[in-house]
Length: 183
Image (tube, rainbow, N blue to C red):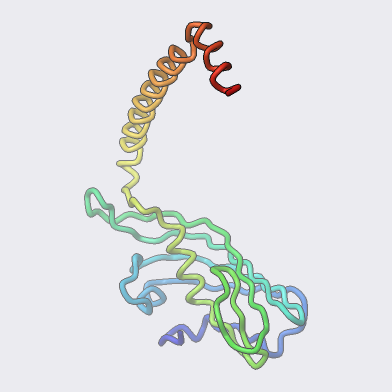
C-alpha cells in the first residue's frame, strides 16, 4: 500500500501511549495523483483524525471537510463538490494482518506505522454521489424527481383504490371462505 508521496500520511503507533491522539492532514492534487483511475484529480480536503489507543485495539475516527473538483455527468463541466463526512475504523492487534470487515483491520503487534492515506481517499470517494451533477442542474433534477414521485404516488393511490374494491366483497363470500377454512 506504500505509494510515493504518501509518507506524510504515516502515523507512528509503535511508541504511542494509550489514550486519545489528534492528527490533521491536508489533501491536494499531488495526493490524488497517487491513486490510479481516481474519481478525483483535484481537491482540498482537511482530514482530522482522532486515534484512541488501548492495549488491544486502536479506534480511528476520520472527519473530512473541504471540496473536490468533479466533472458533471451531464455537461462535462468541472465544479467543486463539498465533502463533509465522518467515518470510523478499528485496528485490532493480532497474529497476522487481515481485513475482517470494511471497518475492522487486524494488524500485528510489530506494526509500527499506520498509513492513513488509503482510508482518507476511500472515505472521500464514498462521499461523492453516483450521479455527479453541476449545481445548476440540481434544481432541474429535483423537479424531475418530484414529477416521478407524483406519478408514483398517483399510481399507488390507484392500486390502493382497486385493492379496497376487492376487499368490499359480498358478505356471503366471506361466509363461504369461513366454511372452506374450517375443512
